[in-house]
Length: 213
Ligand SMILES: Cc1cc2nc3c(=O)[nH]c(=O)nc-3n(C[C@H](O)[C@H](O)[C@H](O)COP(=O)(O)O)c2cc1C
Image (cartoon, rainbow, N blue to C red; front, side):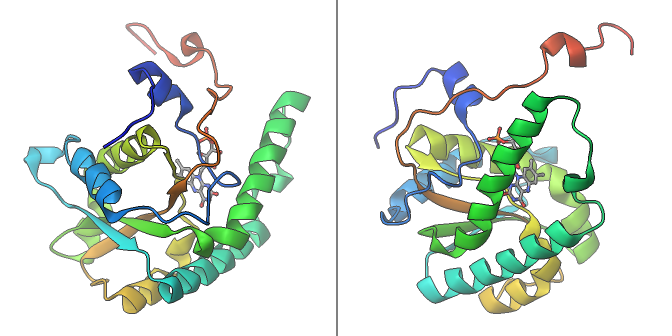
């Protein structure tokens, strides 16, 4: 296993949503994905019960079908009344940041199926309600998966727009819809270059409430 030379703080501050810098030409070895899942499973879970499942799709036809479903979800999201295009931005910098993200998201909308692997981060439960309600039990492991990927020179993006057609995906991949919720669809690929920067974020003091709200 080779990992990038990153300190823990660099890893935590440079694991970005990678879209335009995903290398679609280079396959990701299964072994690397296995390592990422192994590390993901070290994340905390309620009562130490592992309800996370990772559906890894490398088959070209299935990726293409997932890509088409994602594109459709993206288009529907863009047309939805709540879409941020109608938001007012506080300043030019925020607007510029948003425009950059938007162009990158549009690119992924067109290319999701081109990623060499698509990973569905899932939550299981005895029934559909428990699987959906139990999302918080698996989210720490999904983020750990993405951190482990970044450490190995792989890029990921947390995406959710597949969810509008989740039942169809369940059918395509044989996922039991009644007790498995597909929370996240992650494109996984080597990154084009490994240099990523911390994102502009609010100062810690803006979001900390010391001792009382
Ligand atoms: C809950 C959640 C849902 C998201 N859904 C999508 C999505 O469907 N498509 C997409 O391109 N990015 C999606 N993102 C990625 C965000 O747009 C991205 O994390 C954000 O713009 C900040 O960029 P950064 O991660 O590079 O700092 C999602 C992120 C989160 C946490």
